[in-house]
Amino acid sequence: MKLNMKLKNLFHISIVILILFNSCRQDTVQNATQKKLIIRFNPESNSLELIGLANHVIEELKSDSLPDSLWTNFFAVYEDSNDPEMRDFQPAIEGAYTIEGDLIRFKPKIDFRWKQLYFARCYTKLLLQDAEDLIETRELFNSDGFTEYKFYLSKK
Image (cartoon, rainbow, N blue to C red; front, side):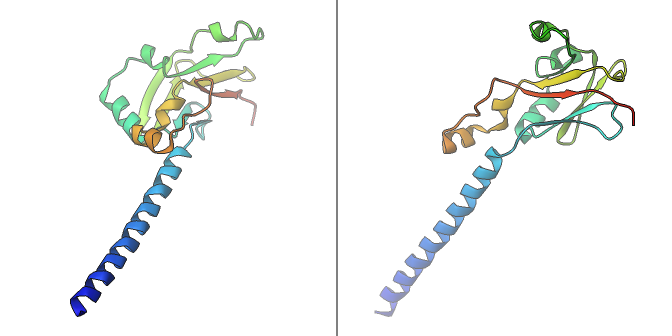
């Protein structure tokens, strides 16, 4: 009789533990899918920073030694055009790309000019999610395929 009661208690305790573990796992999946790409100026306003990529993407980019010319397929900065139809045909600004911890930094070859309008694009919104996240949530980001940041330098 005592053994039977101990087994029942052990069964109930194990169910409670499994429920707790499962609820913790769901919170981490929800937090991972809420991660967003952010493009911003660095504090000195001489380069742009891309933040919010999944760790596996950062590690993959670190292992591939991409030349700067191929980085523009992923993260590019452009001078904005007055003609909206020509905007998507602008050449990317030349510069250097570096990975520093969990961010990617773009420093232009020639400094950004005052009052010139620019825009930066990162073409990887779908890379924010791990394959496990896609399976778990069964959702993809609704986007037009890129994150964009418009900016210009103004006098301090």
